[in-house]
Amino acid sequence: MKSNVYLFNLDISYHTFQHHYSGAASSVIVHTDSGLTLQLPAMRLRPFLTQLGVRGRFRLTVDSNNRFKSLEQIS
Image (tube, rainbow, N blue to C red; front, side, top):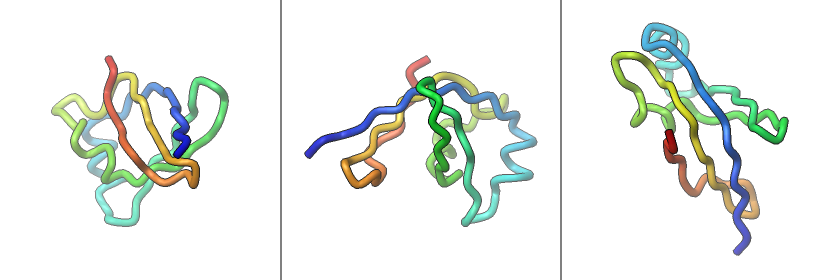
């Protein structure tokens, strides 16, 4: 099965993440390096939340149906 990989940067402060994305249905809009706009459930970013927020470079992998496979912080 073919996978699609998207790279993007995030810089969301802790306060902003907690305030805006704490609901179960909340989502985060990201802009990939290739110019695409993607919508991710905020819960996918929770493992990367630190006291500084969610910051860094990320790699999102989805399957051929655009279903989530993995999200990893790469820097």
